[in-house]
Every structure is written in C-alpha cells, then in structure tokens.
Image 1 (tube, rainbow over the protein chains, first blue to last red):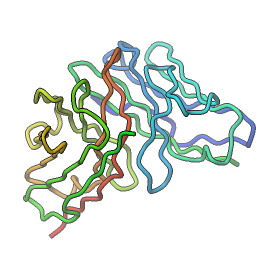
Image 2 (image 1 turned 60 degrees about the vertical axis):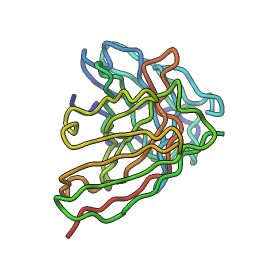
Image 3 (image 1 turned 120 degrees about the vertical axis):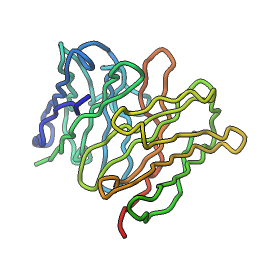
Image 4 (image 1 turned 90 degrees about the vertical axis):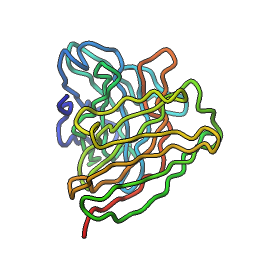
Length: 110
Length: 120
C-alpha cells in the first residue's frame, strides 16, 4: 500500500477553522471506517486525536473532529490555537491486518 | 495509566541487525496488538508490524522478510529485530499499543521513540 496523500502544509489564523484531507484508495480509506489521526509536536511521539473516522478519545479537545467521504478522510480543527501548531498524520486500516499512514501535514498558526 | 518505555542500540552498522526493546507498564498484553512504527528523520510514519499475546504477528509486506517482532509476556517486553540494515533503516522507532476492541485498530499510547542510525 502506498502512503495516504495529505497536503504538505495548512495554515490558519487563531480562532479560524482548518481542514486537513487524507486521500487513499478503495483498498484502505474507501473500504473501512478505521481512520485515525495523530498530532506530533517537534521531538515528541505522536498522540492519538481521532479514531474510527470520527471518535474522539477522552481528554482530546472537542475542537478536533473527523469525517470521511469516499476515499478521503478529513480532520477539522476549529477555533485554531497556537498549541495546535504541529504535524498531523492520518492512518487507515488497509486490510489483511495491515495499516498505512499518511504523508503528514504541517499545521501553522499564523 | 499505561506507559511504554523503549531502549536499544542507537548506532548499528550496515548489514547488521537492529534490536530494540519496549517495556509495558500498567497494562495487560491480552486483548491488544502491540506494534512497531518508524519515522525517518524529517519524514512520515511507517507501520512496521504487530504481535498479540498469542504470538500472532502481522508485518508490513515491504519489510516482512527482514523483521521479527516478539513478545515476552512474563517480563512484559516487546522486541523488534530488523536484519541486514542499510542507511534507509535510519529512523526513530516507536512502539505503540494497537487497540482492537470493536475496531480494526488505532495506536495509543506510544513509547517515547528511539533514534537508530545505520552507519559504519
């Protein structure tokens, strides 16, 4: 499986909403509702933000939401804050007990 | 609270075998898969493979001929071995718990990561 495609960078001003896309194929994103999203600050391990397309773990701000349409999943961050500046990665179950990650998106808060 | 603590050699020579360990604290091995994920410097994440407490393993097809993941349930240790390494295997390696209850899987929590450099 090739890596899922994400935009290299997305930016927004504080308080705005931004959306990060994650495009796969009918073999991964399009076939399963098992997309997760991870936030990674520089020098830190990734942290789970969304799982199963739109479920939010306890402790994650409700400013983070996920959705999916066809072969593309999306992560939306509303009310953008300085602390949201980080890299974000999507991940999808890809069948046969394998997983594929996205190429990653750097979010910049202007 | 579940914590994963990693350790292992940070420098490996080309053609040799990379070996890393991950200790699991505050969680049982049963009911989960336990995974390894890597990240080349400045690049994205790559899923390497996983194992459950029954010893069932699943590997990334692009790596499976060089990778071995094992579990020592008595010592609560997850291990990774990658043979015949090259510079392309230079990366930060993470262990992570893969949650599979009512889902196919997501990764939480993660270890702190170990940078492994392949160089002579």
